[in-house]
Image (cartoon, rainbow, N blue to C red):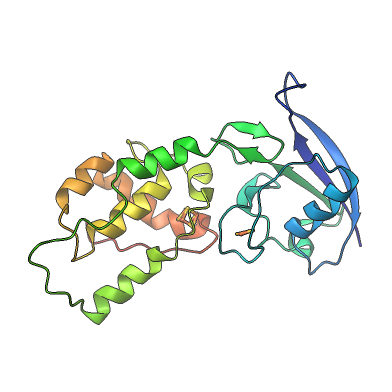
Amino acid sequence: MEVILKISRFNPESDQKPYFQEFTVAAEGRQTVLDALLLARRQDPGLSFRRSCRSTICGSCAICVNSIPGLACQALLRDVAGVARRIKLEPLPRFRQLKDLVVDLDPFFESLKAVIPWVVARDDYSGQMAPDVSRKLEEPLSCILCGVCDAAMEITGKAKPAALVKGLRLSADPRDDLGAHRMRLMKAPVEILKLFVRDLPNKCPKGIIIPGNF
Ligand code: SF4
Ligand code: FES
């Protein structure tokens, strides 16, 4: 089928502001938005977007598809093209557009760093973890740091959504020594965290459920 991609273009060296450009590509409905973008780039090699794994693993292809943040390699053309066969593609909202669909990820990683995103080992930890605790922690471990939640959710507090996922997981980790201090680092009121935990699975491309025992 033919699909029209309406893509936000912006080159900081030549453009005052972003504009939309349309590309018509021939693709199958079972192909992804990322596949279509790769076809569009054959028409304009300067078209910029990030991607690596093409398998919803690396998190690098996060963009806005028809105004909804998600992964370009996860969105099937048959699901998003509609009867008009048109798809609007923009960079992630709440991020600065650097070029076309590429955004500035520095604030995202700064926010992550602020919650100390690694286990600070307890001296007295036995080395064992109960299976039910381990299972609970596995879910947020599947975060691929794509930034979709940061783009899709407005959160009050210091840490942005992906950092909250990391911080909440670590605060529930029995190996971690920071515990309550880590919760303070996040500076998000408990009521806000509860709403965040409730809404995240619907926004996150991996459907992540985080332990709510805080
Ligand atoms: S929690 Fe989900 S949406 Fe947020 S960065 Fe991780 S994988 Fe992406
Ligand atoms: S290209 Fe890796 S998640 Fe899409």
